[in-house]
Image (cartoon, rainbow, N blue to C red; front, side):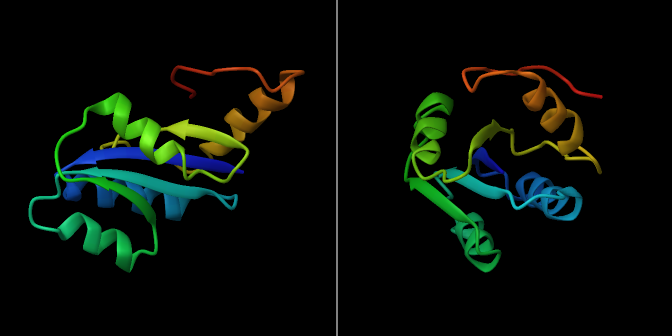
Length: 116
């Protein structure tokens, strides 16, 4: 249903927490995609490979916008969700979002904000 794109810059501790929350608390067949900038010690890419998570990589910090655009190109699901690497996805996070999408009568939309 969702391609969740996450840019990261040498922040494996929080990225792994974010990814684990997505795996634990998602009810749909979502795709997690990460753009890795720098990865000075290779740990982030090793982690993503072990988790079987697709990612793009740049050897330098390309900035947030470029990172998002690079990783979004490999998305395969119907909807993109942009997340930060230090976010935690709570149980049931998809339901209000799916309900909002269903209430919109077209596919040209951008939803932003906190859904509680």
